[in-house]
Structure formats: C-alpha cells, structure tokens
Image (cartoon, rainbow, N blue to C red; front, side):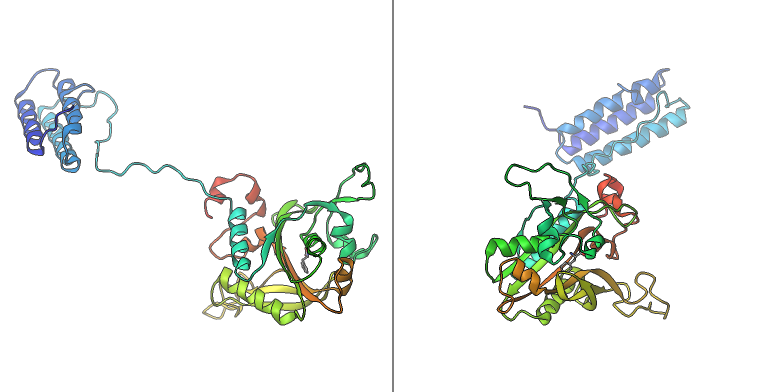
Length: 350
Ligand code: PHE
C-alpha cells in the first residue's frame, strides 16, 4: 500500500527544496532542478500520496514560480526544451465530445410525441409503392395532369410473378400512407401519423432528392374542418411556442376537398410582419410561413379505400420535416443539403 503524506509534510519538502536550490550554485543548476528528470519533476510525482490535491497542486505551482525566480536571479538558462505549461491538478478533465441523434430523428421523435398526445398513432407505410396507392386511389388516375406536381422517380422493374400489374414509384409524398391505413383498418376511427422518407427529382439549396414528410389522417363520423384547425393550432403551440398560431388558406389538391395550404405565424415578428421599429420582418415579410398542405379527405379517396363517404368524413395534412427546421429562429440552415453531407459543424447546432 502506498503511504500518504500530509499536506504539511509535503509543503515542508517543497520548502526544503526551494532552500536547497537557493543555496546551490552548481553549473547544471537548471537541469538539476527544472530539467525533465530534475528534482521539481520528482517531487511533483509525490502529489499522488497527498490527499488534498488542490492545496498541494497550488503549493507545487508556487514552488515552480519560486524556482524560476531563483533561476532568473542566478542568471541560468532555464529553457533547455520548449516550456511545458505549469501543471494545474485542479483543472477539470477535458470534455470528451459526445454525439447526439440526427436532427431529423430528433424531429421525428418530437412530432410523434406531440400528435401522440392527441391520440394519433405513428405508423410506417412503404417508401417504394404501387403507383395506384401513390396517385390512383388519391384521385389521380393514370395520365392525370395533377401527377406532374410531384417530381416522381419511377422505378423500372420487370415485376414479381403474380404482381406484374404493379407500377413501382419511390413515394414523392407520404399521402400513400392514408390509402394504406384506410385499407389496413377497414373502418374508422382512424388517427394516424405516417412519417417516412420521400423522393423527388429536385436538388438545390432548398431541396434534397430524399427528404422526410409526415402525414396526419383522421377519419370518423362528423369530423370537420374545425377539428383540423384545432389539431394544427395545437401543433403550433406545442412545437413553436405558446403564442404561435396556424392559418389555413384555400388551395388545391386532388385528394382533398376543400384543400388548404397551412401557414404558421412567424416567431420573429409573432405574426405581425413587422419588427419593433416598424420595419418589414426580414424573416417572413407577411407574418406567416407556409409549411404544408391539408384538406378534408375527398369522397373519391374514401371510396377508393373502402370507406363509405356518406357515413364518414376525415381530414389529412402533411409537410416536410427538414423544411420545418428552416423556420426555427435559433437554427441556421443556409443549405438544406447540409442535413445529409455529414457536416458536423452544421449538425452540432441541434
Ligand atoms: N401530399 C401533399 C404534398 O406532398 C400534402 C398534403 C397532405 C396535402 C395531406 C393534403 C393532405 O404536398
């Protein structure tokens, strides 16, 4: 077992060494006291046996300064090797860098949690799917011009025996999840959140060919637009903060009627469109940010998915996850492709 040395004893030893060094005039003074294997180095090692490391470390630092002062007085060259910084045993250890979940995964967890509190259950539906689920049952028959709005990747596949009729596409939106969920459950109540990767033939600072969307769907008896609005306002408050609001504006989608675009109030100007001194808000210009689409599920869609549109109604909404980050005031996304190029400096801000 190693012996412990009391702080007083340790301090005495340092004191003695200082006195010895003061009296010593030998030619190798510098190496002897301050050299790599010199007496200071040796006595420093004894700190291991002292309990009060903080005080002992301080005493060692004092001795080091004292020896340096003596060296200066004796006019000896102390610098034989590059100076090593004085040891400070009281400093906390260096932090080890710790990673974290990718921002998209973080957002998926957050979204799942927020809608989960309203009873929407997260489901997973295919990202490579039949054209029929991506467009056909969503009221866009083959050749329908509305299909052009989705910059779709079509996949040439000879077909699996028995499934030659399938025309494969990489899902350009998560709305195919609506179809799958209605067909899977067969009857309401339905409350789902489908979060998945989506693919479009677009690439620039605001688009990546692969990105994420989430899709909400609620179908039941007597579901109406006020329910949709309530859910969107709830999301705005929970996600962006208590004074955030949502707004829906008339729009067109083939699979919803009526259809809307969804805006959220700007967090810089709180929806006023102006800064405190009356200038136009640079971030939003109008007080609102457009994020996604929504609407009441079109009766044709309910029917194509096996539900009776005279009995049931529903709403759906959906938008991109990466884009949602670009609207957060404390996050800087100069180029949306940064989410996927492994740039740690960018990722560390999340
Ligand atoms: N799928 C639409 C899009 O990709 C968004 C949407 C979802 C619209 C649900 C209405 C209802 O833009």
